[in-house]
Image (cartoon, rainbow, N blue to C red; front, side, top):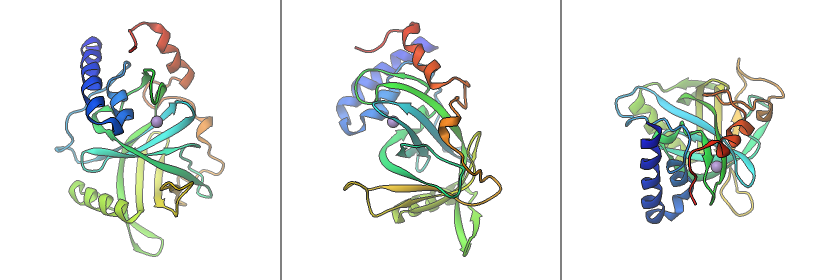
Length: 229
Ligand code: MN
């Protein structure tokens, strides 16, 4: 199984990197070694997925990804998501991630994005609509949910409820005026029963899938399977 996956991954890596150079990070993930859970097309499910990858590349960051329209629009959050409703986390948009590789955990090969990747959190989400000031309602029908999510992202203000292993409750992703000439967003926790003052992602250095730390995942590199060169 893992050999098959690795070979398949290598093929995808070679072919797709050349076709879509702007999506190298996603391609590297799909072409990398490690435990890759392949999940079939999402059309028959009733839930939208989210995942947060903790990624120790040149600098440590958390890739926050929400399923919309069969892909996962993504934001790179240097400090990671927080359950503290008084903090706003800078979130820089990055390229869409392949939905079927959302459970990738392992070490990315040399090149852009090289380094260990952890599934820091994963689960499902529902977009929310504000029915009156401060009162939000979840959109649970998948078709409607994707419409709302897509429209909200275009407008630069998506409210949603996460059902993760670490992250729970209501959040907002809000586009701001920009940071260093680049489009930037903020990830904000709404105040609710899951708010947790002082919550810092770095205090939770364990995988939602395997419980491994980022250092333990990084050590995998030396543990066998050939890397890319
Ligand atoms: Mn990344």
